[in-house]
Image 1 (spheres, one colour):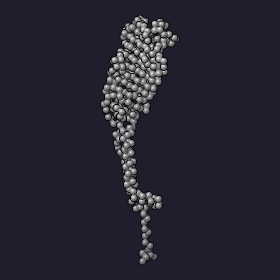
Image 2 (cartoon, one colour):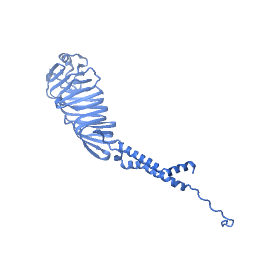
Image 3 (cartoon, one colour):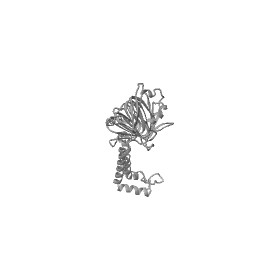
Image 4 (cartoon, helix red, strand yellow):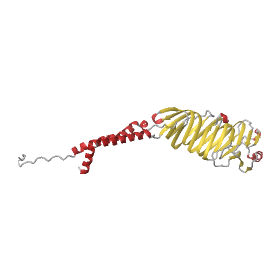
Amino acid sequence: MSSKVTSWLRWLQRTPAVVAVISLAMTGGLLYYFSTTHPADRVNLSAQHISRIVVTGTATADMTGYARRIRLRGATGQVDVVLPVPATACQQLAGELNVQCDGTGITLGPSFVAEWTAAQGFNLPSLAGDRIDLSTVPSAGGGGMQLTVTNGQIPLLCFVQGDGAAKLTLTAGSASVTLAPAAVAVHLATCSGLHIRVQSGNPVGTAVLVLQDLSDTTGHLGGKQMTVSAQSETLTLVSISQDSPYNGPIEIDSDSPFQMAVQGVPPDMTAPDGLQVPRAVHIEQAHAERLANGLVRNPLTSLLESGIPIIVGFVLWLLPWMLPKLFRPHPAPPPHGPGGGRRP
């Protein structure tokens, strides 16, 4: 063996504790890594009595249902509302509301209320934004559902006249006008009636709309990060077949978009099909990570990989005693005489 190898082996013989300490430190480091690393997992979430859903990361939403009242008040941004009223009524309504009617409809300030004497169908086509927040409105605030869109498309809310006759009252600021049932069109195509733009001083700001006296509401929300707040929730980690009941907000992050379907009327909004996330990379509930860590998810693999430094350390500990024996030169055989016998 070379002198360098020999000196290295002698050093190992003199300091076996160093090898043990290094091996244990590496094993401890690997165990810590696996216990704090949470591999992506497929998860399912069922929720009852949902009070709020916040979606970020290429957020999308759509909704349909019946409502008797829409309220837009004190918000920034812009919301477009299409009423089941003939466009020919634009000039008359604009005069009664003390605003102007242009070729595309009526533009109002940030305070607007439309109320029917009976629920009317509505359709909120798909819209996108950086953040979409769907939440229930407390009964003290009139009840209903609030939709908030941040840094996204202008919400377009289209109403369709129901089968029954209903009066429509429009309130903009201090002005108000009531339309008799005969003045409201019944057979207009969806989103083809009178266009009203409810606009604040900052039209590109956060848009907020409130729907009240709801029924038969269904919708979809999607994105890469979703926080669901409900009275009752069950989170299922598919990889380890574990169900965990929770209450309160649960945040689920994924590296690809996912979607949740909701239905019902606040405060009894539910997700009938639950939420399925094929690849969740982070789940937070009560400020704690709820994804299984590496030791729980793959215990055998994690422990074997963590034990490699100890095995290597044991081998290194044996080397100073094994290598000199393996590479020790064998003595030459004694010389033989001419007759085959050994020389004296």
